[in-house]
Image (cartoon, rainbow, N blue to C red; front, side):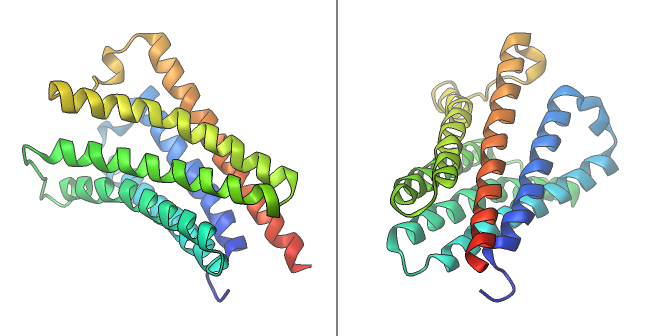
Length: 213
């Protein structure tokens, strides 16, 4: 496997996904923390690094299963999904570099990339679950199924935001303009989806450890 093996990248991805969840929750619940430009820049740079680590996990996954066409294809979807999540972050990074992108179609590009990324990750878990049914232990298969469900739930608000943008020309309003129960529901979905993905990474790492023995 070389330096970038699946076991190590699974562990790194656990921390990366956890950070991105905390980042989103803090930005949602306590936005005043990010009123300091320096704090925002640092948090955003770390988020970019975390998303890059997640992409490296999928690359390691593809390398591990390169001889199995369907799992290799699943990993390709994972790479596309994480890259699609990374690109909007890189675009936004230009703001901190003093080169803010203010194109009229930029919002559409961001929404489209996020939707493509979400669907690609969903396809990753769908294919992995289907393949793991026959080849992996029950715990790993169940983890893939839970991550599939979590990804499907997290895709709903992303798709709703994209549809609203395409149809009305405006993004869904900020959490400050949402009913408390809607905000609570979105937070619950984020936590559940992230927990299922972390559990998947944990089970993959455990399976790699067992195979090395």
